Figure 1 (cartoon, rainbow, N blue to C red):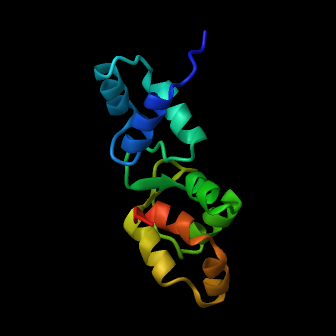
Figure 2 (cartoon, rainbow, N blue to C red):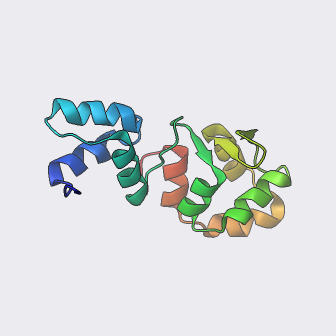
Length: 132
């Protein structure tokens, strides 16, 4: 049985999404009298467009691609060419830190400047943690 999300629950998770992990948000909801699993919260956050990364300042290449509305192979290509610095989570998964994204967006390769400029600035600000 699936319980419909209330407006108050949604307000709480949206307010806490960028500061807390799903497990911490579940604890906060429990204090307010709501019972949601961390998996349910992570799924809802993902559906709302928030990062569900266990590290709040790290993103996967797929998350970056989803936010920027580009294909994930585009972001992976930036990584393979050395334009976007990462650390590897596994042999096929990349973990991109927020400050590496900032470096990339501040100083993109010359031939990508127009493409980067055409990306929605709100999406870039979201990834960099800036307030609009």
